[in-house]
Image (cartoon, rainbow, N blue to C red; front, side):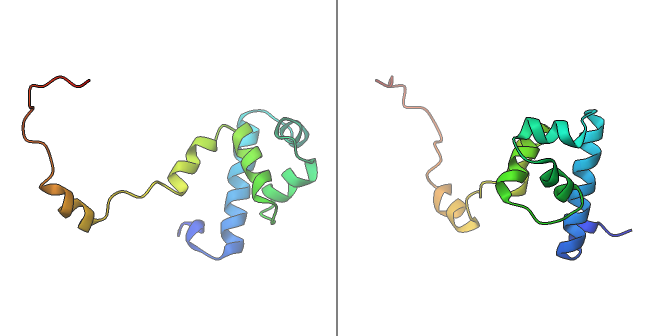
Length: 103
């Protein structure tokens, strides 16, 4: 079966909503409890879990309560140096220590 996150926007939102609902249930939280902890309305939680659109701020608040906020780094990781930058910096790598103390 294909990963739903590679499908349409609607399929991505539906898969995300299902995952959020499963995480909420694993934490034994009702939709109202999650909403209260996140500072959003219960309707917002219902919309998120149904794969409907909501404000990004609301998603961040819910992710924080569910312990998923750290996973956002995987969503948009810091870019590393480009291959060209790596080549440019290659000759600048230190090969030995100078023996002088830093001040």
